[in-house]
Every structure is written in structure tokens, then in C-alpha cells.
Image 1 (cartoon, rainbow, N blue to C red):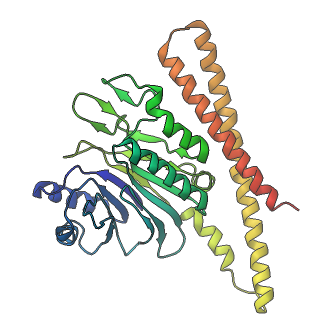
Image 2: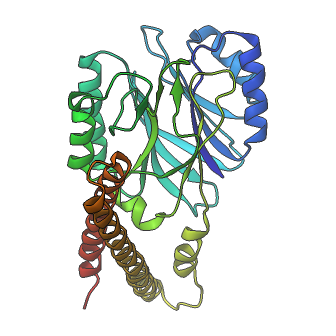
Image 3: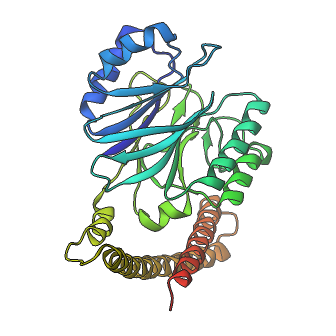
Length: 332
């Protein structure tokens, strides 16, 4: 199963629709977001039925007819329950029919004006404040986050990353690691990383090892982002609740709650141990890099590596603190 987001940059041409149909066929069992498609509302049903026959979909069409976002999903595998629809995002809950996996999902398409951007960061903060459980915000942020996110273009200034960094700090969100291409957008002169996936602490506690694949862009100037998700992590938790053999309704509920509590404590211990090891390993790598910097003061690659390791160390320390707080709730 996977979640995919892709800026298709104009979708009225038949060859783009044909290529996207092939892409969807190759990526079954998925939730797929297409943004900046610029398809008018009266044409949408015909095109979505053509590119994803049998799939369900939702858009952010409004009275101004400026829809830019579609979410399509395979109804044999997923349910998508929309919660909030905006001109720059669609937010909702993704579940598998088996109920073994559920998470909040916000597909992102940032508009270009300063007013729209500031409004979007504030809305994402609001979603973070009320989100229960794992949350994934993924798509086209139309913004860089780090100094290395642009190549062969103007040097990234602090003002370009300020709002993004403040959002990450305020919400304790983390960027998922990536594999594949280094950059997600190009105009054939400049190469930038402006498409990404962010997750909350709860996600990192339950699914910390997931990685986004940056795929080849095909006809678009943006690369699709693909996140493979396994539902095995949730299966054991639900099996504990569904164990039979309890006698009496109240006693049965009580026994199930006790079993769930034991599993949660075990999972927290397991995750805490994993995070503790990651912190130790990151500290070790950071020390090695800093020793090298001592010998090669102006080595820009080492300086960037040091910055990245410091960022990772801060991330895992925050996760460790969050897990510790959850463990304390179930102590005793």
C-alpha cells in the first residue's frame, strides 16, 4: 500500500492523462493526489473515471471554480473521510477496510502569494493542534526548508526558510527521509526540493522507518512522491483487543483494557530503545564529523553534514521526550 502525491502541472492534454492512467495502473492499492491539474469541474468526472476506473475521488472545487487538488483512492483497500477542504489542501482520515491502519492525511499545494502562504502555515498549525494519532502532510510546499534545497539558482536566504522552520519548530513535525532523486522540481535551469512529506511525533513513534521515494517526473516538472506503508505494525495491537475468551461484558472490557495497556507499555519500551540507539549513533557520527572539521575548517560538505546531524539529533531527542511522557502515563 502507498500514498503518492504528484504535481502534474496542467492536465488537459490527452497524453498527460494517458501517462497518468498508466502510472496509476502501476501503483495499485494506493491513495494518489494530483495537484495543479487545472481541470474545470464539468470535465473532472469524465477524466477521473478515465484515468482511475473504479476508484473514488474528491476535489477542492469551490464556487470560484479554481480547484487544484484531487485525491483518488482504491476503494477496495482504503476509505478516505474528508474533514477539512481548503484551496491549498484537503485534510482527512485514511483507513484500510481491515481497520488495521489509520492516519490523518493532508495533501498540500501551497499557493504563491505571501498572504496565502502565511494563512496556510497557520491552518496547518491548527490541524496539528487537534490531530489525534499519526499525521502525514505531503505534497507541493512550493518552499525550500534547508540551504541545500536549491541548486544552480539563487542562493537560499534565511527569509525564504524562516516561516517553514518556525512551523517545524512550533509543531515538532519531522521531514521523512527520501531516496531516489535529490530534487523534486526543475525548470531545466534550477533544481529545487519543494515537494516533501512531514509527519508528527505520533507517526514517528509508530512508523519511524518509512522513507519517501522520489520518482522520475515523466511529463511533469515535478517528481511524484511515493510513501510505501505497511499495516503489519497495527495488526498485533488490534489482535490483542479482539482476543476471545472473556466472561461477562464488564469483565471482558476490563480484561481487554489490561491487555491493551500491556501492549502499549511494551511498544513504548521497544520504540524508546530504538530511539535511544539512534541518539547514540547520531552523537557518534556528529563527533566524527566535528573532528574532521577541526582539521578542514572550510570544508563546506562537512559543515552541511554537521548541520544535518544536529537537526537529526534534535529530532530524535524530541521523540525520546515524547515517548518518555507516554510511558509515564502507563507506569504503575
